Length: 115
Image (cartoon, rainbow, N blue to C red):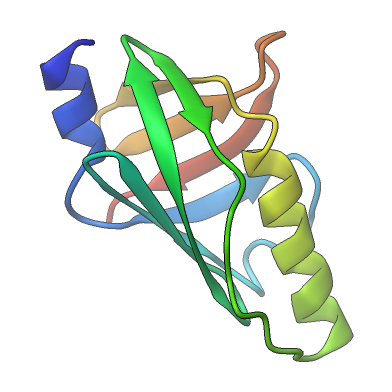
C-alpha cells in the first residue's frame, strides 16, 4: 500500500460533483470522508459508513451499513445513485483537489472535490 496516496484520501471531506448514475448531483450532493480504513458517505438523506482497503490506486469498498430514514423521492433517488456508483468503484486517482473514483473497466463513477 502506498501510504502517501492513501494519506491523501484522508482528512477533509470530498464533495461529490459528478455521478455516473445521476444528473441531480448539484441539487442533492453527497460528501465522502476517508479516515484510515473507514469511509463515511453523507448523502442527501442519510449517512453511511463502511470499511475500505486501499492498495496503491486500488480501492475496495465493502457494503455500507446505515439506519436509513426516508426523505423526498428525488433525494432518495440521488442517494441510491451515490451508493450504486460507490459499489462499482475499484480504483481512484487524485489530481490536485479532485478525486476520481472509477470502475474496473476505467469508467468514471464519481468525481469529488475538496473545497
